[in-house]
Amino acid sequence: MRRIFLGLVIALLTFGIGALFVGQKRHKNIASYGSSFQWTSSDGGRMAHNHDLLSSPLEATENFNAALQRAADFMEFTPCFDTSGRRIGERAVMLLLPPQVPEATWRIMWTQQQDNFSELFWVESPSLADTRAFETIERQGWKKCVSTK
Image 1 (cartoon, rainbow, N blue to C red):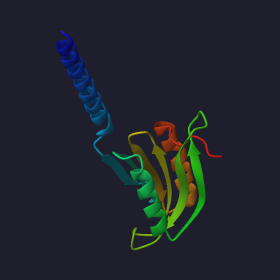
Image 2: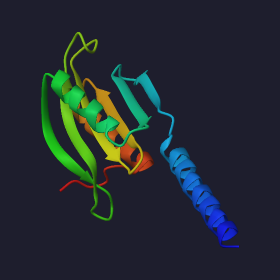
Image 3: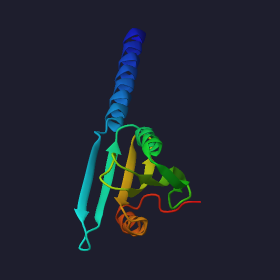
């Protein structure tokens, strides 16, 4: 009887541990994807925005840091916080120059990290004022990096 009981306990533990690992694996396996749109406004200005959902919590930060290194200049490097004050990423205003882009372009980029994935957002335009206005509009839809300190 003791042997049957011990075998049942081992079987239940094995099943429970296996189910735990499978559940965690499914939760962590997020397929990376991105969306990017570019258009020309009625006054001839070029504008673009991008959103990447990445399968690693650090991948957005790595891409953000690589973009900072490629930028001709950057300013307003600040941490991003959510509405509860928890730090979720970084934000920076970058100046990009040819040959990376067709013309001098201002890009505002920000990140959001979660436990099992990260997101990278950016908006850009040749005009810094237009880029700032565009960021305000995009943030209303994406609700990311709603406050910086």
